[in-house]
Amino acid sequence: MPRDYYAVLGVPRSAGEADLKKAYRQLAMQYHPDRNPGDKGAEGRFKEVNEAYAVLSDPEKRAQYDRFGTVGPGGGFTDAGFGTLFEDLFENFFSGGGPGRRSRAARGEDLQYELKIPLEEAATGLETKIQIPRLERCERCGGTGAEPGSRPVTCEMCRGRGEVRLSQGFLTVARTCPKCQGEGQLNRNPCAACQGEGRQRAERLLGVKIPAGIDDGMQLRLGGEGSSGLNGGPPGDLYVLVRILEHDIFARQGADLYCDLPVSFAQLALGAELEVPALDGTVRFKVPAGSQPHQVLRLRGRGMPRLRERGHGDLCYRLILEVPQKLNVKQREALAAFDAASKGERGPLTTAFFERMKKLFG
Ligand SMILES: [Zn+2]
Ligand SMILES: [Zn+2]
Image (cartoon, rainbow, N blue to C red):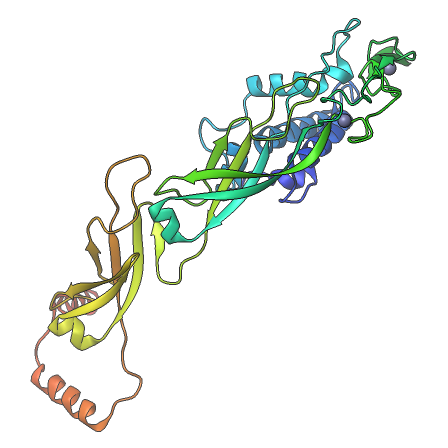
């Protein structure tokens, strides 16, 4: 079994991107090999933490992991992926950068929105509006975080470098400047509207188009519709995670829909024409004489549309035999008469079974 990535990072399954990042940073700092030289246990934990974050920070991989408990071939954690991730997050902590090395521009956060839709709408596709809370560039300061008319000043503690160097025994470690948090600059007159953040919370109504045939757990990416970037950085993306509500009658398997259809012995034996449920109403449906319990009968092309392909799956009815729990006098007589009329007759299942028994017991 793969490890529980959420447990590795110590976050709930509902954790947002910011929480993940925070938990990851904390743990990765704690178990970083530079801080635990020669400690194999810490090294193992460090790898685990990185693997968990590499999966959970990627909305596609996370959705796949949430659904299947694993990340399939090609979707897994790779050393190359880890390299960029690591540099990205730890630039501030461990790099020996020169003055002005760190760019203050940062990409906005990706956001995820869970959209629940009924099976019928997954079959037809739909256009809908969703309300997204996100961070947008502050209008008052234009995203700078400083009151209009004022400018940030160079941090005197790090002299604008954004980092300070500390000696720990033989080791010199570069740390983010605690005074300016790595910015290199201090904002002495924070913008009154955004408290110096440069961004403000906003609610946006966005139109989304869900294609016909979408399956549970799939995500749509709306590029640039995440939170705004910082200091001129690009915005993040919005991922719409589609959840399909459980249906009262149909269970879905790929493009096929399954329905358990209760039938009587007489209907199976004699054949019957029934009115059965379909996604868009009811249809007349023929059960051929001599059908067997648990047999699956198909209405071709009446299932779900195939996503980005032509055609539909099938509508499948599994015949479930219902035996009466009580019989009235007439029914009992009729069945007794049927039994008497059937004496000596054996169907293929019964014949085969008795032959196997004979082999076994002679
Ligand atoms: Zn502002
Ligand atoms: Zn500083």
